[in-house]
Image (cartoon, rainbow, N blue to C red; front, side):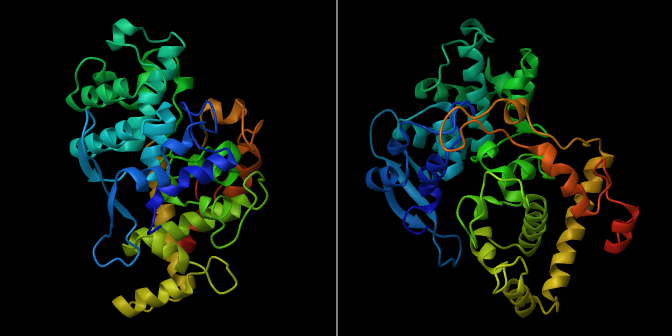
Amino acid sequence: MRIYGTSYVPQVTNTLGILPTRNFLQGTFEHVNNIDGDALKNQYLIRHTPCYRCPLSCGRLTEVPDGKYKGKGEGPEYETISSLGTGCGVSDLAALLKANYLCNEYGMDTITTGMTIAAAMEMYEKGYISEEIIGMPLKFGDHDAMIEMIKLMAYNKGFGKDLAQGSYRLAEKYGHPEIAVTTRKQEFPGYDPRGSQGMGLLYATSNKGASHMEGDVAYEEVFGVPVKENPLTTEGKPELVKHFEDSFALMDSSGLCVFVAIRYAFNKDRMILPERLAEMMNLSTGAGYTPEEALKAAERVYNLERMFLLKAGSTEDTLPHRMLHEPLPDGPAKGKVVELDKMLPEFYKVRGWDEKGWPTKEKLMELGLPM
């Protein structure tokens, strides 16, 4: 992490066949070596950068010194590489850095920006949106067109007005909602869940919509932290996802960086019991949590968020058509879809929710939440 930051991850996900490529039409990218951590470190890295007093120092200060993509700034992180890079089929690293700098300056999220442009690229290539509407050709791999789309989105001009609404509303407007790879209208991050079943269940049930930061079971399925889980099996994933979702609620509520906190969220037997994390919290706040009480507080947070969503009308835990019905065409997970139907009913039981995904009265009483 100190050497590469998160830019080492494309090689990991590419090897597993879960690297989002060309709007999730593929799980591997043939030019990954052009935009991975080594390429970034050897060509454009100035130095690694930390958040305040962090010993990890996983940030990247980078610079493209000259040419039409000249610029300097923070990043890119893995999610930027997988969205504005492989997601859009872009293999030009200097252009990718320029796109990242622009998103930073405009205050635009790189995941949603990249995957919305990726959806538009697929729709253009399939003839669903014309060049006349867009104002130019918009093919996968066209980095100059990608950069132009970012500018149009930022200033809400021309086709950028459609792009600025996100991929769900873009695809819906032009009659092909199946092109948008979203959950609760939020674009998928950089792990194709067809080759990481736990991530599929997480995306479907996350209170944030598709988000790896709501309970990133990729730590076990992809990186083996603290233990390696088989990413292609559904067995045990409902309980695993539930525990990770609660643990991430604890980390978020504590204000802790997940990169550090995730390694303190397990006991000596590598089970999800935050003994050391609770100790850190108690030493700094005097709150006196036991590990069990800390996890119970996190479960309360998660269920309270859930009740808010349900009462606001967000009641469907599902995944887009591509994840459920279009098998991965390449890589180690070739032929796989997300087997959500196998995992979701058991997940509801593990959570103490009814068959429709509503927390039961008993669960709400146990957590001390209003009904």
